Image (cartoon, rainbow, N blue to C red):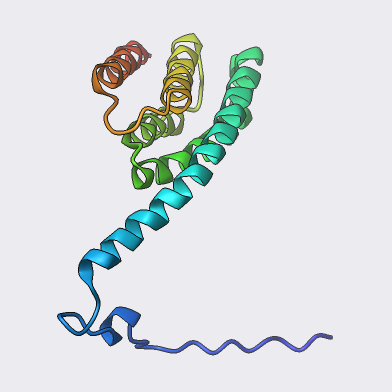
Length: 164
């Protein structure tokens, strides 16, 4: 029988930041900010490539759910939820708050239901199409008039599901 591994947990570990001196002889705040921007910019390419792959997975799960009878759509939509949840967590960090907003709305829509009738599927498909638009067009920031129109359209779709 294998002996369990002992893990030591240290309490009250000081943060690295508390050990760094700030001021004229310490950290150059402007250089630190520039380095942080550079790190995020370097990861942006990775995020966008992963967003492209996530979009493919979301579209696959959505198409799968749409082909199934209403009572069998749940598992495919839970898979879609999981992928959208990952996008939701990262979009804003990389300058794509529309991805976060749309994915969060999609997650709420799926989470709030146990049955996915035609109006619910139309709203889900609308969210997927909106994500496709934002990701393919690399629509950073609020997306301007196009971003506002996307969010307006989603609000109307969501309104049609409220009757159910």
